[in-house]
Length: 138
Image (tube, rainbow, N blue to C red):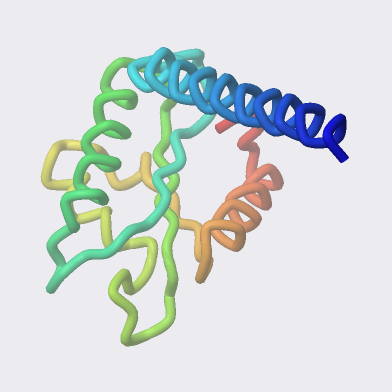
């Protein structure tokens, strides 16, 4: 029994060291990549929906829309695809929620598309269906 305890202690210490090292690596990668912004040219910019209140985008949605507009103005893509749920009585009623915000900031309506989905997965799946209309990269 005496030989098992030191061996188990070493294994536990090794496992703990691996967990700590992995956590440190993950935090380092998040910090290193949090400020990166890949501005490769694409066919469209996708803005995932978020809450809005009485027609006003939530702070999260507003930041997403502002960033999409910045990318659009910088010539990254000629179109913006807005996603969201079309179910009534949701905090984010439909992908058109962001369009008045973008249109008020001089993004032409013809440059906006809409994609419907009740979840991130559904929104991205619907956006992927936009390939039929000529979008190849987003």
